[in-house]
Amino acid sequence: MAAEAASDLERLSRKFRPALVAFFSRRISSHAEAEDMTQEVFIRLAQTQTDHFDSTEAFIFRIATNLLRDRSRRDRVRNAYRQSVEQDDAGEVDPLDPHRIAAARETIGKLWAAIQALPEPTQQIFILYRVENMDKQTIADNFGYNVRTVEKHISRALVFLARRVGGRP
Image (cartoon, rainbow, N blue to C red; front, side, top):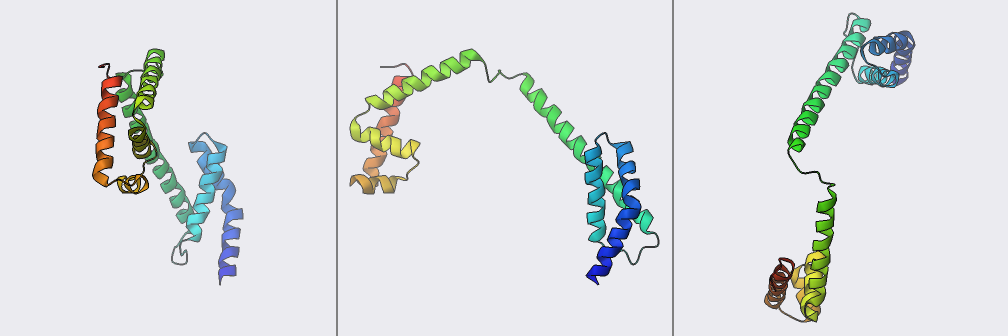
């Protein structure tokens, strides 16, 4: 039965493929997309029982029309989203502004220098927690501390770094 369905689909493909490609080509600009949509018609046709239809040709072109409608809806949604993003971005600062990049690099340099100035166990704990994303319990186990001591080291590091990077001595 599967071989019979495959041969019917092959017969329909030979008969309707050129007409479908022409149908899609008249409505969209890309020949490759017309081929893809033609293939999608036959995929949907293979997934459907066509025994109870009066006209297979009408059904095939109904699938093609629905594919065009779906494509049109997708394009409208994408265009609306693209326009909303462009409108949102119009009032914002350019992310590639050289002054912002230079300021960010300077801040990162200050932050790294401040991290280097932390006392040794506090520096290691802070880097493990904030950079390496280790949980507090694991850090506490590795250093032989309890979790509360690790939290105090992290808190001290944050206060120290905020003062150094924020410009306060």
